[in-house]
Amino acid sequence: MTSAVLPTYSRANMSFETGEGSWLIARDGTRYLDLGAGIAVTGLGHAHPALVKVLQDQAGALWHTSNLYQIPHQEALAQKLSDATFADTMFFTNSGAEAMECAIKMARKYWYDKGQPDRVNIITFTGSFHGRTLATISAAGSEKLTKGFGPLVEGFINLPAGDHEALQDALDDTIAAVIVEPVQGEGGIIPLPDACLKGLRDMCDTTGALLVFDEIQCGVGRTGKLFAHEWAGVTPDIMAIAKGIGNGFPLGACLATEEAASGMTAGTHGSTYGGNPLACAVGSAVMDIVADHDFLSEVSRKSGLLRQSLEGLVASHPTIFELVRGAGLMIGLKCVVPNSDVVNACYDTHLLTVPGGDNVIRLLPAMTISDDEIKEAVARLHRAATALEGTQ
Image (cartoon, rainbow, N blue to C red):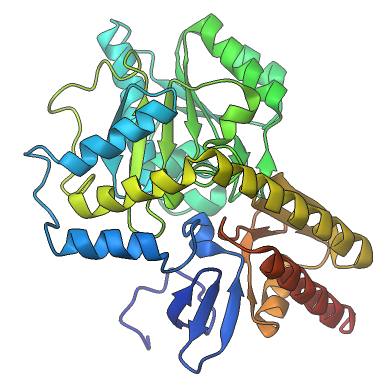
């Protein structure tokens, strides 16, 4: 072992010292155009001036007190999120996995307090990803995530995505909740059709099961709405968010209606760091920017420009790319060759992408990316594809 860091990641042999907007700069000064944004995290780009100032100001004032006391920045961020969403209340965390843990506990506690303690089962779907805790890998259920970590947490029923008949049959009076990503991220950038989200809402309303949306990757403006489910005109009972809400500062939240959260009383859940003044000051500043209508309209416009260019890329390189799909600035390029080959070829052009399921490379740029940077990114993808064609 050459490093004291646990080798749980297959890291690329590169590192970065500074970042500016859509660019990461290596120690030797090489500039990389970043279409990964820390896996959909730095949605406002690297070193955003307004966020840097907020963090510096808060760091000079107060870092941490714990949730034994009132935290004004937490209250302010909660109100902004509540005003902009379906949610009446929320719990702040440090990560998306913790937000999902809270959602799972909330759904089960809801039915326990309703006098149905055996109503604990939760439906999830193939291709999903909800985090790396024992509960969240049990929820996703894939062997890639769960192998070697048994016994798994019981009570999760994993169904084939899109199998409405199987879902209808499974929705009995033992089901506490249904968890779904409006756009699967790790699974390969697969949007759930609006009709499916509406159908899920109707089924849950009929059976009483709580509907939980995981918007950890697809939320906070990435699809051109503040949250992806807004495109379908439906709302969940509970929603987990993270990634973009802190723009790189660890922050997540579990949002809920007052009814869904009714069982989460004092002492039922907690976090030492979650919702601390540093994180919430940054999150509040992110919301001020991302929740703006004009900002979201620009995300949609830029996504149209990128999507159109990528369709041309796919048509020009049919032995490398099969199709393009996604929503907003959350785009997947399904590859014909191994996606790892494409990621590595992009490194050679100083372009950063993210591999995903279903042999996809994920394009998750900062939402502040410029038109010129979009054109440059597509040009580098063309060069990477051309280089791969030369090896065939």
